[in-house]
Image (tube, rainbow, N blue to C red; front, side, top):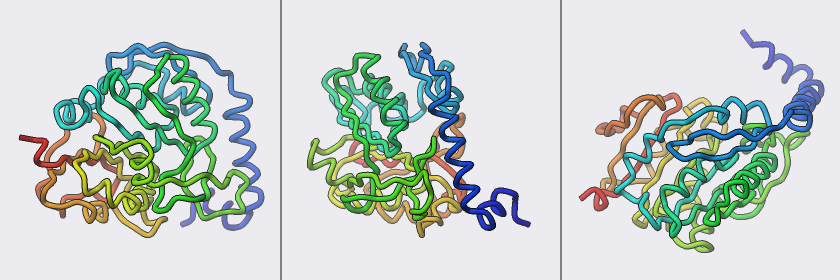
Length: 275
Protein backbone atom coordinates (compact mmCIF):
# COMPACT_ATOMS: atom_id res chain seq x y z
CA UNK A 1 0.00 0.00 0.00
CA UNK A 2 1.30 3.47 -0.89
CA UNK A 3 2.03 5.78 2.04
CA UNK A 4 0.58 9.30 2.19
CA UNK A 5 3.79 10.89 0.90
CA UNK A 6 3.89 8.62 -2.15
CA UNK A 7 0.21 9.30 -2.92
CA UNK A 8 0.73 13.07 -2.61
CA UNK A 9 3.77 12.98 -4.88
CA UNK A 10 1.93 10.98 -7.54
CA UNK A 11 -1.49 12.63 -7.45
CA UNK A 12 -0.69 16.20 -6.47
CA UNK A 13 2.94 16.86 -7.45
CA UNK A 14 2.44 20.63 -7.65
CA UNK A 15 1.01 20.75 -4.10
CA UNK A 16 3.69 18.47 -2.72
CA UNK A 17 6.38 20.61 -4.33
CA UNK A 18 4.86 23.77 -2.87
CA UNK A 19 4.71 22.24 0.61
CA UNK A 20 8.37 21.21 0.39
CA UNK A 21 9.36 24.74 -0.59
CA UNK A 22 7.39 26.25 2.30
CA UNK A 23 8.88 23.76 4.74
CA UNK A 24 12.40 24.57 3.55
CA UNK A 25 11.74 28.30 4.00
CA UNK A 26 10.47 27.70 7.54
CA UNK A 27 13.45 25.46 8.32
CA UNK A 28 15.98 28.05 7.16
CA UNK A 29 14.74 31.63 6.74
CA UNK A 30 12.56 31.60 9.86
CA UNK A 31 14.70 29.34 12.03
CA UNK A 32 16.02 31.05 15.17
CA UNK A 33 19.75 30.70 14.65
CA UNK A 34 22.29 30.56 17.43
CA UNK A 35 25.93 29.68 18.06
CA UNK A 36 26.76 26.78 20.37
CA UNK A 37 30.01 25.44 21.75
CA UNK A 38 30.63 21.73 22.25
CA UNK A 39 33.31 19.07 22.21
CA UNK A 40 33.61 17.35 18.84
CA UNK A 41 35.97 14.41 19.14
CA UNK A 42 37.89 16.16 21.90
CA UNK A 43 38.02 19.51 20.08
CA UNK A 44 36.09 22.55 21.27
CA UNK A 45 34.32 24.19 18.32
CA UNK A 46 31.81 26.98 18.01
CA UNK A 47 29.08 25.92 15.59
CA UNK A 48 26.30 27.89 13.93
CA UNK A 49 22.94 26.21 14.41
CA UNK A 50 20.98 27.42 11.39
CA UNK A 51 18.27 24.77 10.87
CA UNK A 52 16.56 21.88 12.62
CA UNK A 53 18.89 19.21 11.22
CA UNK A 54 21.91 21.20 12.33
CA UNK A 55 20.34 21.46 15.78
CA UNK A 56 19.72 17.70 15.96
CA UNK A 57 23.16 16.76 14.64
CA UNK A 58 25.48 19.34 16.16
CA UNK A 59 23.97 20.84 19.32
CA UNK A 60 25.60 18.29 21.64
CA UNK A 61 29.02 16.83 22.37
CA UNK A 62 30.45 14.33 19.90
CA UNK A 63 32.83 11.50 20.68
CA UNK A 64 35.86 10.77 18.56
CA UNK A 65 34.92 9.21 15.22
CA UNK A 66 35.75 5.53 14.92
CA UNK A 67 37.25 6.19 11.49
CA UNK A 68 39.94 8.37 13.05
CA UNK A 69 41.22 5.64 15.34
CA UNK A 70 41.48 3.18 12.46
CA UNK A 71 43.20 5.69 10.17
CA UNK A 72 45.55 7.43 12.62
CA UNK A 73 48.57 5.59 11.16
CA UNK A 74 47.09 4.80 7.73
CA UNK A 75 46.80 8.07 5.88
CA UNK A 76 45.20 10.43 8.37
CA UNK A 77 48.52 11.77 9.65
CA UNK A 78 49.96 15.18 10.39
CA UNK A 79 50.30 16.92 7.03
CA UNK A 80 47.67 14.81 5.25
CA UNK A 81 45.51 16.18 2.46
CA UNK A 82 41.92 15.09 3.00
CA UNK A 83 38.92 15.39 0.68
CA UNK A 84 35.66 15.70 2.62
CA UNK A 85 32.99 15.15 -0.03
CA UNK A 86 29.46 15.84 1.07
CA UNK A 87 30.73 17.98 3.93
CA UNK A 88 27.35 19.31 5.10
CA UNK A 89 28.13 22.21 7.48
CA UNK A 90 31.86 21.46 7.79
CA UNK A 91 31.87 20.09 11.35
CA UNK A 92 33.58 16.86 10.27
CA UNK A 93 35.86 18.90 8.01
CA UNK A 94 37.00 20.85 11.07
CA UNK A 95 37.61 17.60 12.94
CA UNK A 96 39.63 16.33 9.98
CA UNK A 97 41.62 19.58 9.93
CA UNK A 98 42.57 18.98 13.55
CA UNK A 99 43.62 15.41 12.76
CA UNK A 100 45.79 16.46 9.81
CA UNK A 101 47.41 19.33 11.72
CA UNK A 102 48.45 22.82 10.67
CA UNK A 103 50.54 21.41 7.82
CA UNK A 104 47.60 19.39 6.51
CA UNK A 105 44.77 20.49 4.25
CA UNK A 106 41.08 19.65 3.99
CA UNK A 107 39.14 20.18 0.76
CA UNK A 108 35.50 20.46 1.83
CA UNK A 109 32.89 19.99 -0.94
CA UNK A 110 29.16 20.50 -0.35
CA UNK A 111 26.32 20.65 -2.89
CA UNK A 112 23.69 22.49 -0.84
CA UNK A 113 24.09 26.26 -0.99
CA UNK A 114 22.56 26.63 2.50
CA UNK A 115 24.84 24.01 4.09
CA UNK A 116 27.88 25.33 2.25
CA UNK A 117 27.27 28.86 3.56
CA UNK A 118 26.75 27.65 7.14
CA UNK A 119 29.92 25.56 6.81
CA UNK A 120 31.90 28.59 5.65
CA UNK A 121 30.70 30.50 8.71
CA UNK A 122 31.77 27.64 10.97
CA UNK A 123 35.23 27.55 9.40
CA UNK A 124 35.70 31.30 9.91
CA UNK A 125 34.22 31.20 13.41
CA UNK A 126 36.87 28.68 14.46
CA UNK A 127 39.81 30.39 12.67
CA UNK A 128 40.70 27.50 10.35
CA UNK A 129 43.18 28.42 7.64
CA UNK A 130 43.70 24.91 6.28
CA UNK A 131 40.18 24.18 5.03
CA UNK A 132 39.19 25.05 1.47
CA UNK A 133 35.41 25.05 1.05
CA UNK A 134 33.79 24.49 -2.35
CA UNK A 135 30.12 24.70 -3.34
CA UNK A 136 29.79 21.79 -5.75
CA UNK A 137 28.56 18.24 -6.20
CA UNK A 138 30.98 15.36 -6.72
CA UNK A 139 30.05 13.41 -9.84
CA UNK A 140 31.38 11.32 -12.72
CA UNK A 141 32.05 14.33 -14.94
CA UNK A 142 32.91 17.98 -14.45
CA UNK A 143 30.18 20.40 -15.49
CA UNK A 144 26.75 20.92 -13.99
CA UNK A 145 24.24 18.65 -12.31
CA UNK A 146 20.76 19.05 -10.81
CA UNK A 147 20.62 18.99 -7.03
CA UNK A 148 17.74 18.93 -4.55
CA UNK A 149 18.55 21.83 -2.23
CA UNK A 150 16.64 20.48 0.78
CA UNK A 151 18.33 20.40 4.20
CA UNK A 152 20.04 17.08 3.45
CA UNK A 153 19.99 17.35 -0.33
CA UNK A 154 21.00 14.94 -3.06
CA UNK A 155 21.44 14.70 -6.81
CA UNK A 156 18.08 14.47 -8.56
CA UNK A 157 16.60 14.06 -12.02
CA UNK A 158 13.42 15.96 -11.06
CA UNK A 159 14.22 19.24 -12.77
CA UNK A 160 10.72 20.67 -12.24
CA UNK A 161 10.90 20.67 -8.42
CA UNK A 162 11.21 24.19 -6.97
CA UNK A 163 14.06 23.05 -4.68
CA UNK A 164 16.02 21.59 -7.60
CA UNK A 165 18.90 23.81 -8.71
CA UNK A 166 21.73 23.37 -11.22
CA UNK A 167 24.96 23.08 -9.24
CA UNK A 168 28.58 22.87 -10.35
CA UNK A 169 29.78 19.26 -10.69
CA UNK A 170 33.39 18.30 -9.96
CA UNK A 171 35.25 15.01 -10.15
CA UNK A 172 37.59 13.53 -7.56
CA UNK A 173 40.33 13.38 -10.19
CA UNK A 174 39.68 17.05 -11.00
CA UNK A 175 40.03 17.99 -7.34
CA UNK A 176 43.25 15.99 -7.13
CA UNK A 177 44.63 17.79 -10.18
CA UNK A 178 43.72 21.19 -8.74
CA UNK A 179 44.76 20.72 -5.11
CA UNK A 180 47.11 17.74 -5.23
CA UNK A 181 46.44 14.04 -4.65
CA UNK A 182 44.66 13.22 -1.40
CA UNK A 183 45.86 10.88 1.33
CA UNK A 184 42.32 10.25 2.56
CA UNK A 185 38.93 10.66 0.90
CA UNK A 186 35.72 10.84 2.93
CA UNK A 187 32.52 10.40 0.88
CA UNK A 188 28.99 10.97 2.18
CA UNK A 189 26.85 12.00 -0.80
CA UNK A 190 23.44 10.43 -0.24
CA UNK A 191 23.56 7.52 -2.69
CA UNK A 192 25.64 9.12 -5.44
CA UNK A 193 28.77 7.22 -4.37
CA UNK A 194 29.17 5.16 -7.54
CA UNK A 195 29.08 8.23 -9.79
CA UNK A 196 31.77 9.88 -7.66
CA UNK A 197 34.03 6.83 -7.91
CA UNK A 198 33.58 6.71 -11.70
CA UNK A 199 35.20 10.14 -11.77
CA UNK A 200 38.18 8.99 -9.70
CA UNK A 201 40.09 6.64 -12.02
CA UNK A 202 43.51 8.20 -11.39
CA UNK A 203 42.95 8.73 -7.68
CA UNK A 204 41.83 5.12 -7.25
CA UNK A 205 45.14 3.99 -8.75
CA UNK A 206 47.17 5.85 -6.09
CA UNK A 207 47.83 5.16 -2.41
CA UNK A 208 44.65 6.60 -0.95
CA UNK A 209 42.57 5.56 2.04
CA UNK A 210 38.82 5.77 1.42
CA UNK A 211 36.01 6.26 3.95
CA UNK A 212 32.60 5.87 2.31
CA UNK A 213 29.13 6.03 3.77
CA UNK A 214 27.23 3.63 1.52
CA UNK A 215 23.56 4.53 1.66
CA UNK A 216 21.84 1.21 0.93
CA UNK A 217 20.54 -0.63 -2.10
CA UNK A 218 17.21 1.22 -2.05
CA UNK A 219 18.79 4.68 -2.24
CA UNK A 220 21.59 3.70 -4.63
CA UNK A 221 18.96 2.18 -6.94
CA UNK A 222 17.78 5.72 -7.74
CA UNK A 223 21.12 6.14 -9.53
CA UNK A 224 21.16 2.69 -11.14
CA UNK A 225 23.49 0.95 -8.70
CA UNK A 226 23.62 -1.03 -5.45
CA UNK A 227 25.88 -1.38 -2.42
CA UNK A 228 27.86 -4.30 -3.85
CA UNK A 229 28.98 -2.16 -6.82
CA UNK A 230 31.31 -0.21 -4.52
CA UNK A 231 33.72 -3.14 -4.38
CA UNK A 232 34.20 -3.11 -8.16
CA UNK A 233 36.41 -0.03 -7.84
CA UNK A 234 38.93 -1.69 -5.52
CA UNK A 235 41.14 -4.78 -5.60
CA UNK A 236 43.15 -7.32 -3.61
CA UNK A 237 45.91 -4.79 -2.85
CA UNK A 238 43.50 -3.17 -0.39
CA UNK A 239 41.82 -4.25 2.83
CA UNK A 240 38.18 -3.56 3.63
CA UNK A 241 36.67 -2.70 7.00
CA UNK A 242 33.02 -2.00 7.68
CA UNK A 243 30.30 -1.42 10.24
CA UNK A 244 26.53 -1.07 9.96
CA UNK A 245 26.11 1.12 13.03
CA UNK A 246 28.12 4.18 14.06
CA UNK A 247 28.23 2.82 17.61
CA UNK A 248 29.94 -0.42 16.55
CA UNK A 249 33.67 -0.98 15.93
CA UNK A 250 34.90 -1.54 12.39
CA UNK A 251 35.56 -5.16 11.49
CA UNK A 252 37.39 -6.62 8.52
CA UNK A 253 35.27 -7.54 5.51
CA UNK A 254 36.54 -11.00 4.61
CA UNK A 255 33.82 -12.05 2.18
CA UNK A 256 32.34 -9.66 -0.43
CA UNK A 257 29.03 -11.46 0.01
CA UNK A 258 28.86 -9.98 3.52
CA UNK A 259 28.31 -6.48 2.12
CA UNK A 260 25.08 -5.24 3.75
CA UNK A 261 22.09 -4.28 1.66
CA UNK A 262 21.23 -1.43 4.02
CA UNK A 263 23.27 1.68 4.87
CA UNK A 264 26.77 0.93 6.15
CA UNK A 265 30.20 2.50 6.56
CA UNK A 266 33.17 1.24 4.55
CA UNK A 267 36.88 1.94 4.91
CA UNK A 268 39.36 0.83 2.24
CA UNK A 269 43.06 0.90 3.15
CA UNK A 270 45.99 0.03 0.86
CA UNK A 271 47.72 -2.99 2.36
CA UNK A 272 51.10 -1.34 2.00
CA UNK A 273 50.01 1.27 4.56
CA UNK A 274 49.21 -1.46 7.08
CA UNK A 275 52.78 -2.73 7.39
